[in-house]
Image (cartoon, rainbow, N blue to C red; front, side, top):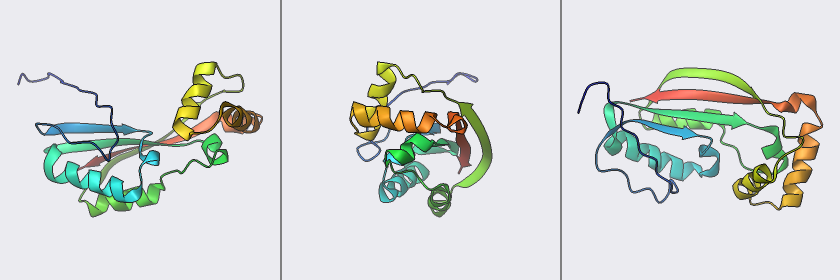
Amino acid sequence: MFPGVVQTSVVECTIESWNGVDHQVDAVLLFNVLDHVESAQRRAFFHKLMTKYLSDKGVIVTCVQFHPMLKILNVPAVDYDDLLKEMSTEGFRVALVKDFEVYKDLSNPSEEIVRMFQKVTGRSALEVRSAIDVTFAQPEARVVRNKLTIFAK
């Protein structure tokens, strides 16, 4: 391996069906995916990463989004304190936490945005549009809180 060379791969699968990789990796990026995985499956995944797939200096980078519209659609959200406990139980430590906000105005969404929320939530277009209308009628809802955390071995 050449110093300074970054190799990447993208895997599209569920955490539950992920079979790992053929070599250890230095980083795993989990942005806005943990909400869609039950706690037991998350812990099993974190255990695999800790014991087999992350290098000695490997990290997991997570980004959890706290979007008010998802609450209206009854989409389960990962409890951040639970995530911290799960990672700690598997031996990870918090190396960095960064809170940040993103401005999102979906008050006039494209069809692609509606379809994306349909896919993520399993709701109809009418339900998604209704949740968008309710959420974005409130100007403060256009600021979405996020929490980026780097967990290290």
